[in-house]
Length: 150
Length: 150
DNA sequence: ATTTAAATAGTAATTATTACTATTTAGGAA
DNA sequence: TTCCTAAATAGTAATAATTACTATTTAAAT
Image 1 (cartoon, each protein chain N blue to C red):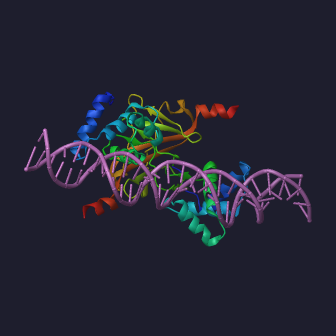
Image 2 (spheres, rainbow over the protein chains, first blue to last red; image 1 turned 45 degrees about the horizontal axis):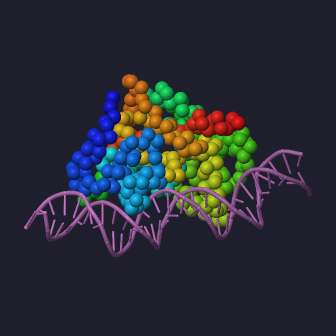
Image 3 (cartoon, rainbow over the protein chains, first blue to last red; image 1 turned 120 degrees about the vertical axis):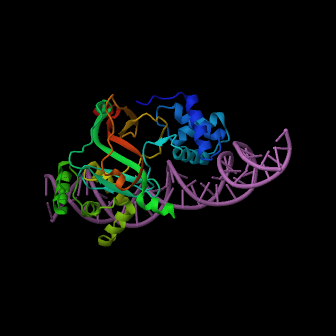
């Protein structure tokens, strides 16, 4: 079971990740990451922006958006939701997952093999009345992998 | 294993669902559902709108949006992505799922119990290079359930 | 056939997100 | 340390998906 590192250790981890990927360590990146890292409430951009602004009055919204995207690229943070640029719909009620390409936003169905099933976590219904479970597998699709090679 | 019904059967199912919930059966609802149901490519609003327009030149975008929301309410279709109104971020790398309330959009962490794990479907990596897996449990949270009771 | 609330068409408004450009700065090299 | 340069940022403007609004239409109950 992964244990959560301290905030300091995680910032160190971020700096390492920046170096590895040749990205600069800027005070904005540190501050924005820090805000997400120390929050337990899955903050949105506005919340992060407001919090960072207290310490860095000149920070711009654009920077917050760009930085969050960078931090995601660095695997330091994740989106709760994919936030596909457009809503996409599915009428297929057979249990299946989705492979979502983070580059082209294409969606592929992953139908489960015989015997496979989605197991609801034990304490899922602590939080409310469950309607459905949605499994998204994120990655880069074969099309985009091929394109990137050229 | 659920088998997929025929288009006619599914439209019948939609009519039933409308009756049950006291919603009207309108040609727009049928047409919009039909488009989603017969597509295998997780269409977006624009695609659905364009297709429906061919048969119903006067249909409005607003109707498509509203109808898709209704069909979702009726459990006849699903969103590939939750499309939370704002992007939300998480820096917690410990494996966990999210309970997302479809009413207030609140997000709750569901940490897995000892021994529980997410099993990747066997043929998930057919489609590309997997980066991560994101499990969303959708429902109505306890807060909203309580509010609705009053 | 009549009635009425629900649903729709057409359009306007909103809002999260992205793009753009001049300026600043991190971090390597001299 | 100082200089240099591409990367990153601030401030603002633009975009685009989605939602809201109002007059009109219509499903379906009476």
